[in-house]
Length: 94
Image (cartoon, rainbow, N blue to C red):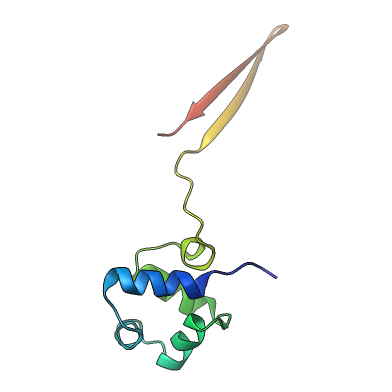
């Protein structure tokens, strides 16, 4: 089973934003009982609901569910062969 951290993450993000579960429920049109379930450890049954909450909190679904930060520093390796010589170019986005 996936190690979902939505319960603790949702609590943390609600506290950080100064929102109650009732506030969040009204703002994203998800039943209070569903959000209470998530906070109390129930696994979400609807990815679209998780996406609504993540977008409202300005998070990715990975951040909300698994506490994984997006990797914005992508690296691409390119190999070029010219004649008998091989070159490798590394491109990084910063």
